[in-house]
Image 1 (cartoon, rainbow, N blue to C red):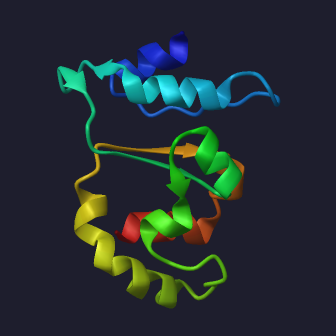
Image 2: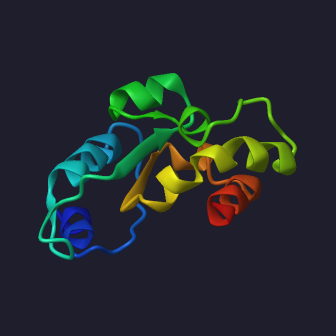
Length: 116
């Protein structure tokens, strides 16, 4: 409940816990609640995960697919060039919800999201 309330207040949050504790379910609920800051449900939200299975569980897509680069792209300049086509789409987002974040929150991935 606390995570949902903080999300409704427009706060950034990090939900963690053991397998089966409801992290993905909480993420799905957050997408459905109205955000007080906007006075309505957010409509421009990206839900991303590291793997196809995780993306299916949270009704999202892999972060590679969303940001427009291949999983084997390791050079940050290549990733940046490929993702620059999506810059407007990314800039217009109200929120990015990340499931299985430990797989995504690598310094290079964070550099990419900050650059966009």
